[in-house]
Image: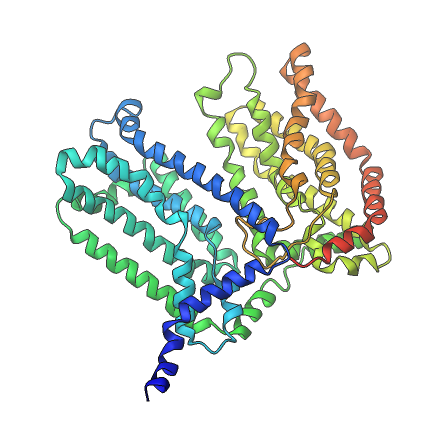
Length: 509
């Protein structure tokens, strides 16, 4: 009887160990293990570096509030600002936090209880540096400011309340992204919440932070908020668990992945012939897949990038405008082509052979990407026109950088991206996924950021700032005039190296 009982119990007792073993074997046996390991080490040190900065920020937070912001009651001020910190956390978790769906699909066919698999995957998703950010930022503040005034107990309870709120956001985002990510509802809901909250506070209509401030102030007097927030963490976890368990079927996962956005065509692109049809297919790729869709959403986020600089006294110049505005305008009007374009052909690596064997397929693919980059950059420029509120200089900067991006930067991006392109899996996560990335992709931003200044600075130095903008515009217009010749040259380069590129794309990821 004892051996039979062991046979029934052992699979459950050793399930976690076996699942961990399977994950390790999957990574070690991959043909790209060495490259993934090297990138993992690099990302690890970058992560340690960034977390160290957050910890240093936590150490000086008390002094920053009292000396720089000149707030007498630092605790009250931080409590009233915590809501905005959590809204910001909602944003960066929405883009960075990984979903365990891909791993879920690889485990469902195994003879394991579905609930155990989901508990394991949800538990593994919790092992993330994102879950210690609140501790690093507010831990030193609790130790240096709250502890001397209220004691160890209230400081610990307050910090626990902050950390539990952050952890409840972790589970909520896992549910929210899987529930709404394949539609625009999720993106609009996240950004609308943030913009309404910040806008209402900026205009003085109402302050949501002050409304939620008593919750964390009460944590200094009683442990009740900790119990309430702990209940919230448990409820958010089981909300996430229940959704994954209810929808954890291979058929539903594949159906959701392939049927969403099936008819999202941009009809006007068909007017540009075969290149327009390729651009339309590329647009479908962008809105279907997580990584490319994230780049499109980041393009919308960078439209707000100018608010950091244009109204900041530190970037104002007594004569003319700050030269840093050229950098801002370049990113606002061209961030999509910089990010998406650095993986120019890698996006099509799974079906590259299809284009190779089609008549004029590669030429149409290249020109379709050009057309798409131009359209999205034009959209970004049009949406950035309201920045004229900060002065006509800003509008002229955006116009000059837009023309330069279309006429020069776009060609540079594509030429550099054609140097030893690498394959990528479109179904992998959107953040911290470096498939398709090589040395050229990492170094690409250096010449791309330097190119506008290489044209602007000489003319600005000798003839004035506006002459520099005019020079950028003329160079950009010249690049637009020779667009057909340059795009044909790029297509011919792809044709010359098509077999080498195709061979590289057939490598197993």
